[in-house]
Length: 113
Image: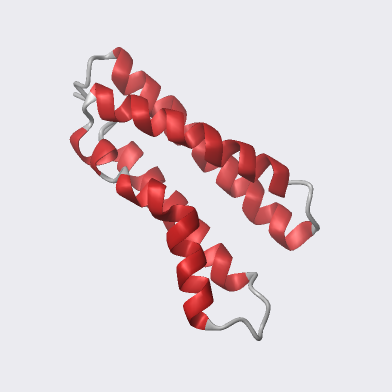
């Protein structure tokens, strides 16, 4: 059961982050610009997709290092007005949960069960 939780939180974090870019974009923003922005902002997180799948301690370490940057960005977004703040609070929560689950799995040596 513990091995499925990092995968679920990783997918939720990635989907909510990309969906938030499209949801809060100005109405006249070209779709191509939003796609490029999503690729630039969430490309590094998408490249770490192997970490929650394989649960290898080294890849989980790099995922945790990367999550620190996303955590800082989401905490700054928590200062925005309410629609963005609500999504940022959810993203901070998912980032913390994913970080803690990855740390717990690393402590166990990559063995989830």
